[in-house]
Image (cartoon, rainbow, N blue to C red; front, side, top):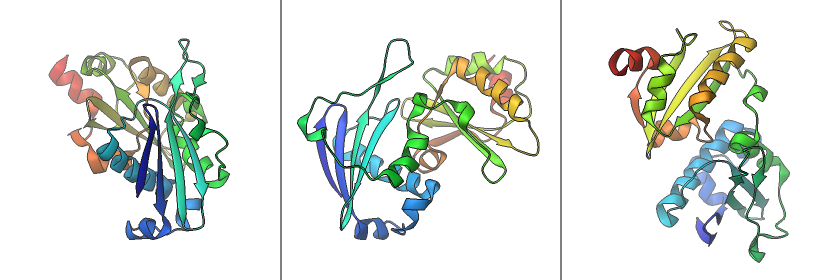
Length: 223
């Protein structure tokens, strides 16, 4: 994979279809499987981080160009405005202008990696489940959250990655109504932020801190 650092907020990399297949991905499935495209993306981003120290923080803006023998991907760290409502992109470099975009794979990635730009309420059940991940900058925020009511019996797991804690929570369509999910997520986001990092990334590179019953465990030992 070829990597080019454009500026502090932007990196561009090229990966051939041969390289994609050598990594265990089918060149067709990355166009149609959101899960597999996310796995490939985070694998590439981890390599970018290793070589260029490109830290992933907040929403990402992604452009993908399909070339004859591979993919060219441009990733920019977007900044939220002070009111937290809009995304600002540092499009000041000439190399970033007029790059053709392949909308098919970009839409797959954008669904997950736009972070705060996308409201959590748009998440829908897939195969009977919803997975949601939030990140805590400070463990004290998680302790405060564990004291809130209405969080009992949830399927949760806590990861550590980098200098943050990540809460994985899974909802079953059979066990919970969407309105209740909205209420729970509203509580979570009072103390944490929705994370662009996927569970695959956490499983591969993160460390499991608590295997289950995160809120009960934190409340029992830290409150």
